[in-house]
Each structure stands twice: as C-alpha cells, then as structure tokens.
Length: 368
Image (cartoon, rainbow, N blue to C red; front, side, top):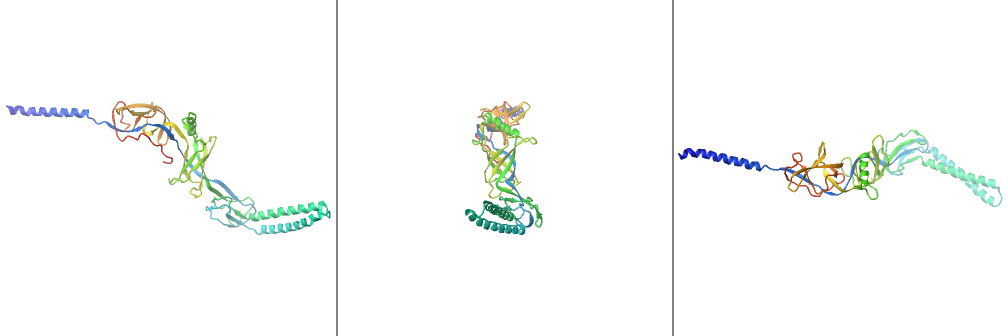
C-alpha cells in the first residue's frame, strides 16, 4: 500500500521543484550591458582640416631680355635651380662687338672732355664747346653701360631659387626681346592654398560673437600639414591670408598658409591636408556622434542615473567637430550617456555598465 502512493508523490515533488526553478530564473534575467561616455564641459581646441594644394611663393617667368639665337640650355628640365644659376646662353658675338664699339666711343669722348675742361677754366674755349664735350662724354658713358647690360643679358639666369619647368624654346631658335623661355617656382617658402566653406566660417563667427569661441590672441592661426602619403610634415606654418569675400561660383573663402621648405619636401602642385589650429571653444560640451539618436522630434541621448536607469534627454546640436558634436543645450556636463548598446536601451529600463569611459576625454590632435 505504501509503494502505490510513493511514485505519485515523487512526481509531484519533481514538478514543484521545476516550477520553483523557472520562477527564480524569471527574476534573474541579466541586465542589458552598455558602455557610457562621461560628459564634461571644458575648454577644447577646435582644429579645422582642409584639402589644400602647394604652390610656389613666387612663380617667375624667365624671359629673354635681348634678341638672339639660343646656343645652349644649361639646366635639366624640372630640376631645382639656384638664384643666379645660368639657364640659357644666347649668341654673344654682336653684343660683344657693340660693347667694344661703345667702349671706343667712350674713350674718345672721355679724352675730349679731359682736354676741354681745363681749357674752359682758362677761358681758352667757349662754354658751348665745354657743354658739347661734356654731353658727348655722358652720352658715350650711357651707351657703354647699355652695351654691357645687353651683353650680360646674353646669359639668362634664374631670378629665384626653385623648381624649373620645361623649356619653351629649344636651342638653335631665334628669340626676341621678352620671349618666354621657361618658368621657375620658388619653393622656400611654400604657399599652401586652401578654401574655407562659407557656412563653416559663419559658424565660427557666430560662436565668437556669442563668446563661446576664442580666436588666437594675435589672430594668427598655426598650421600643420599631412602629405599625400599620410606622413606628417615636420615644420609648422602660419595662416597669413583669409579672404574677405566669398567666391560666388563655389561658395568658399580663399585662404593661404606659408611653410618653410628648405629641404624641398613639398613640391609645387602637390596636394596635402592642412590643419588650422588656434580657435578655443570655451566651456564646450562635446559628445561622440555615436551617442546621438536622430529622431523625427530631434536629437536624443540616453542618460543613466545613479541606479543605471535609462532616461531620454533631447539635445540641441551645433556643428560636428571631428567625430563629435558640439552641444548647444540639453547637457551641461557631469552626465553619463550611453555610447554602446544604445539601440537596445529603453527609457525606464535598468542596464549594466561595462568598460566605462574616462571622466575627461582628451580632444583629438590635429591630423589624428
């Protein structure tokens, strides 16, 4: 009789144990893991990045100053040439003859002037003869100087140090005065030309007027370069020009930076990335873009309280700076907002924080 009731009792005990286990598991559902970003309000640099192009600080046209036949080209096209380096040799014969003739005429006029001058002091010759002798002397002197200048112009030299271009006229051809022979681009210093979007420039001005942005004290922006292969340029430059008008066809503002280029690492026409530094955002709240949910009602971030419960906070965003947004309103600093696991976090739910972000986020350096 005891054995007949033992088996059903065992089954009832097993079912009760399983039910209690299921009820316990329902209360121990793991919390959603998230990563957080600690919001801070602090001064932060606002570097700006632009696509830019290098150009010589002086692009000089090398032209013939006298008429003559080109005898030689004395440089390799595309090579770096020094100031005063001989580039072309023109035929000299006729100019040497003209210089010799002018020198003979000058010697004759000089002797005549030396003869007449003491005679005039003794009243042996008239003032007219004296004036004619002096005029002939001065005229011959000028003609000799011009003849020597023309002779020197037969040697065409580089007016600046820089990269040479291809020849426009080959040796053996007759060139006239002012004929273009080649170009030379001075590369030290080097100009870096870039363009600032008018809208971005307006944002900076508006922030400065609202005293939320502090420009450099001397209004001179520093500049750094990253070359085409991704390597940083060693030297630091300076922005020396920002135009006062917007280009109507492109909607940009022209600007220029100057870099020393003694080692000639930058070549004219080369594309580079320019980073302009100097603006400081005052008491700025910057949050990563991945922390922001863009909804039909506007931008929202998910914040956590002391018990890690989620709440939605609407925020007003200004501009994107690197991978972050500048916040106008909604956050004041000290909040914790979700940076990872944002999609599954729901307002009112409790989450588990893992790998919390540092309390002070360092701003990205230029070129990073």
